[in-house]
Figure 1 (cartoon, rainbow, N blue to C red):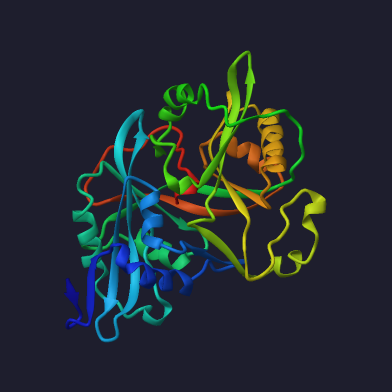
Figure 2 (cartoon, rainbow, N blue to C red):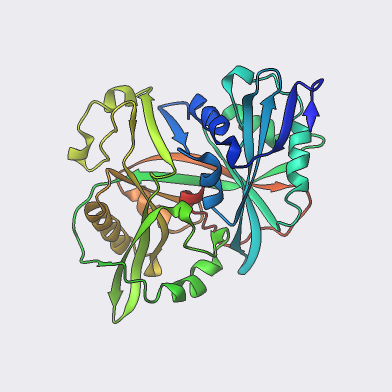
Length: 343
């Protein structure tokens, strides 16, 4: 599809678009106290596809010079919603190359194309960083020919270490995890039914058992093969905090500027009865023995385990979770269990 006097082409992407998508990712970063590039190198399209059953990604190309202008779309996967397995889509967010900001005037048509391509999905949702004020204001305002962004609540990503061996853990003994999927995770919403997507990274399973029953567990994945966080610089108070050996005080060590962060990503975190002490000791032990500079876990505001992470020494950033609605659907109920590994 061509727009603005045939200047731009809008179409679905495939693996041949990797280099152009890569350039767009490298051109932008999280802004604020942390200037971080989120990258999907070396093959961005395949990285999207690994996060679910299918990637439906759109690109915009400048026909005058064949430059890639923007990328955005959805990752489709089967997830639990309101206790049932449903076909869901996570919108990855629209990234526009800085050279083309405020020059693209056909976003409603792009959204319409995406909406038409997601009619087979029962639920569509996305997250937007708190610091992205301009995008939040734009998308929360109801506009003609645009989907409604219905705010569901706040989502926090916690970065922590404070590693200390407090417990004896079993490693890669997943016996009983299928029971947890059926009786615990399936009761939450937006939890992927498949715990084996490549997007989780190369995973290790950590657990504690009592009388054969899992009482605490999680996967820790290494995503650095296909997803990277590059620390470009610090702002605000973190400009001087980053010079302090914060690991002496139980906080993560600040990565060096222009370095790729050696992070592990936690998924399917479970602690029986949401026991605060058990969860704290479990996570500190995992941090100690997993070998990463820091671990990441994300939780929605109604997830009881966020209370534990709030009591730990963490660095955190927040996002707003939205249901994206082209056509009315059933409201999401109960605890929301979105996995940060696949955002």
